[in-house]
Length: 255
Ligand SMILES: CC(C)(COP(=O)(O)OP(=O)(O)OC[C@H]1O[C@@H](n2cnc3c(N)ncnc32)[C@H](O)[C@@H]1OP(=O)(O)O)[C@@H](O)C(=O)NCCC(=O)NCCS
Image 1 (spheres, protein in one colour):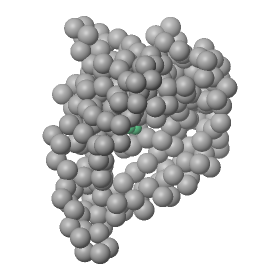
Image 2 (tube, protein in one colour):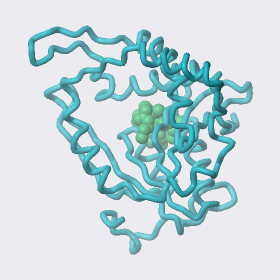
Image 3 (spheres, rainbow, N blue to C red):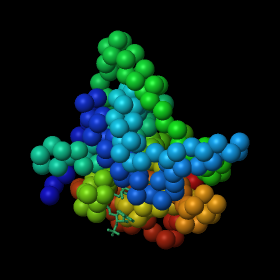
Image 4 (cartoon, rainbow, N blue to C red):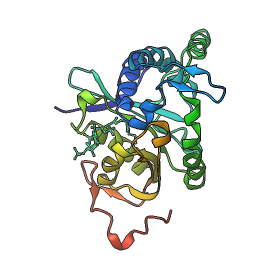
């Protein structure tokens, strides 16, 4: 089946919530953040089941789509019936917030924005706070590696029902084409599941952090990868990398 990548609109919020929450539920470390936990004062917090998370996501996504619309671009992959089958969010660098405007979610009226902001604020999003430290080193390194001037692939998700059909690949290719037209690279922070999608498309591994998450109930292999796409890189007519970056080019640590 052929999939198209098109801009998101406010009306996509519910379908995005279903897609994104269900996709990330397959990630063991992310799923753990919604499990029951006990805080430092011994207070027990119930977990949040996927169905509840989706319901909360449906209330929060409308504002998520609007809140940073100046720099954020939201895209969806749709099947031949127009059904949303995947989602990607990109953050444009300051110098290019006037680019790729068709992927900017159209704004709502002041009254509607206020209503959606309130809906978002009144919907709790209480993940396991005891797991917060696991992302501290990840964010710290991200701050030192992020490349100003490059768009960032901020979120990518494909519902497990649609897995391994090339949907993530077409979503990423769309952003690659935009970056190519602007003559700039791409930076991103990936999870395990997405790594091959990006490296196959020509992204280079810049750095990685693998952490033991067994103290939180994980499998001991919480991996985050820092990737970049070289702005000088060329795509063929179909948006594929050509040819693969040569080994002699590649000190992965250098950015
Ligand atoms: C990662 C993800 C976006 C891939 O979507 P997709 O449409 O299935 O990807 P594509 O069909 O374009 O590419 C398939 C590749 O994705 C990876 N992949 C897809 N599903 C996977 C799974 N369940 N487990 C491990 N890798 C998986 C594999 O590398 C696969 O290649 P392979 O079939 O040769 O093994 C999707 O699995 C997802 O949303 N995962 C959970 C959220 C997440 O990790 N997002 C990525 C953040 S960096």
